[in-house]
Image (cartoon, rainbow, N blue to C red; front, side, top):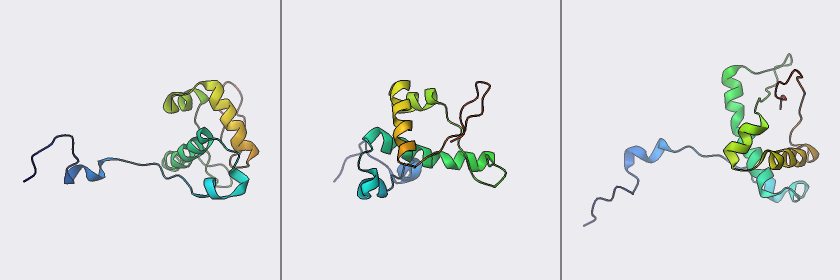
Length: 111
């Protein structure tokens, strides 16, 4: 008979965890082979962030969703330096996975 172990998941806790879904395309498409792991993880986080944009109705005049996410917040989430985040954003732009629009006046870019 199995003993109770508080470190094991219980049935009611099974759906308590949320997960990021990483697109397989980042691994199988030759276009993205040069992306490092940080870039793939960041892109996955940005895809997930679209849900917040949808809830906040962050859309432009063409009804296209944009993200607002500072480099500092991303660095904190990923546990890396802002400098690393800047480098990773460059990789994602060069791979044409993201575009950015400057807002000016010390506002974060629209992604």
